[in-house]
Image 1 (cartoon, rainbow, N blue to C red):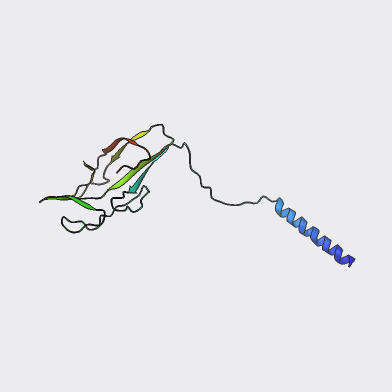
Image 2: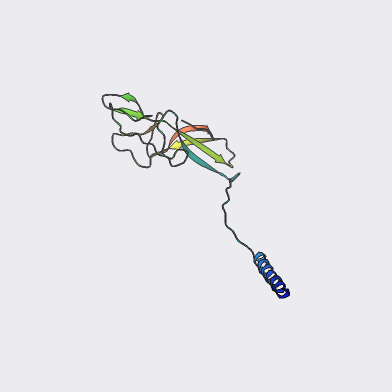
Length: 152
């Protein structure tokens, strides 16, 4: 019985020694840190769906899309798309969306918003934001706009 006790004590000591060697090593781990940069200069442009209009694809991001669905001068239109004018030679379809500019670390309190087409519009089609017809040259849409507020 004395030998069993001695063997048991030796085994426990060996386990403790091995365990202490494991804990003495420098363990490593990986993880994810969720952080927000504070006072970092920059702006973000976000497109938001307007409650009176078509829901944007990717709303709340800087890469949104808007689908008018089927468009015609007299046929039915998708929900949220309107046809404010129809004449003998042309018609207009309209859908609203909101733009928000968020700033960080900047000292200015307002901004100027401009827009332009990446490529010329096809013949017979024009794109407007409010009353401003867009082209491949920058057009001013807003001056002294306030950061962090949706602009329709």
